[in-house]
Image 1 (tube, rainbow, N blue to C red):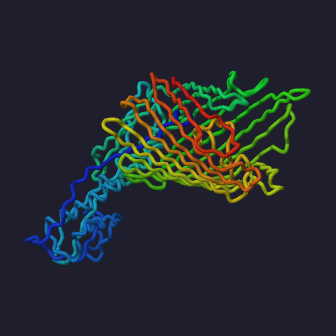
Image 2: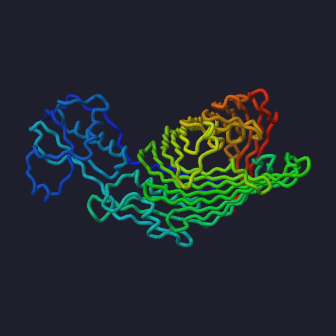
Image 3: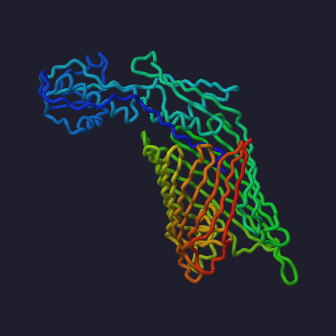
Length: 544
């Protein structure tokens, strides 16, 4: 649901680089140079106020770019350098600066006496001038805060194209907004104005959905409605509320009254290189089971809330790395005929830390993540009943990590996509059922109906998918093969630990209707693990 409401745009802006040239050998007119120095530009009054001796030349803040002159392995000091050689060195350093996002910073040669054996190259830093936002919306939505919260830079800062990319992604993260940028010369020397064209469409959206992802005990057919509001505070923020409930149908394996409901809230707001996300949900279910003398109603509810703060740690032309920290709380209650089953009462809280790295290799995308989750005694947490037997704890320690690799390619004129995802979980403490890794179903190992699952304290999940965008019309035929394995310390509860399944399906968009239909089958399962020989499923949604 979150993916339908938010965008994850990847903005990549390129500076113009000059073609690299080989360093000329044996120039007719050249000077013997044994030292190469990169220094920052000083205005005339700054030069006059300081000693002019070469001994007082201060290294530039960009001195790291000097490594680029040796990258081709055709240049080394000492060397005899003439005008052509100087131009090659300037070009290499300039291209290196552009690679790191300093597209308006320039490298020049100022007048100097090369008989000293020292070549001094001067960097003229390019700085940010005025930052302007031109709102082209039919009804203006943008405010000063829209721009200030989005852009991780201010007038007078060093201009780096990566900061502009981050700002554009913040502006475009809500689905109704579009943004573009132009750099134009400023009135101030060495500064460049950043002019952003911004346009937002109608900010309110209603999404209706229907799928069969529920359980037979409480209703497989699930209907949902989501209301979302883009730019609530005109700060590139997003709010949505979503409700899901089950609908009865004849194929459900239940008697009497039954059903389930879920309500979730979400709010996120970016601030420069940070993103704050607040979320919460409440799930309820009830099921009537006939006994010998009377019927019993089993019911329950669970609630969870989470606050997550992420920060951009590193950004280049081909990568992004984020770190994140979160606080969370979770509680649940179960009842029989409105009497609580106290041994099943849960109340836990804790924190998480992690990182996420995305690498772009041409059109290929590689994502890596790792996360550590720790339970604490906060928010009036209750000890888990399993602690008495050493089979679980409310102060859990869980480490998760994963890889997501997507490779698009073409055969003839037909576009294809290969995606492989691997996720793993490891535990530092015994885990309750809520914290264990479960496999078997459309969101884990496809090909299984999801009525039963295998669970363990540690394990892994590997999903593979090959998709064909038929005639490039937005309808993807896909084939998937998934495998998962779990391990549990409670051996007597284990009937097996490995599942493998396959699926074939079709997904896409038809006249604004998003759809996904699939057919799956188990390939490998433990003996005694009951599931359908053939599993079908669907998901449709329409956004207004």
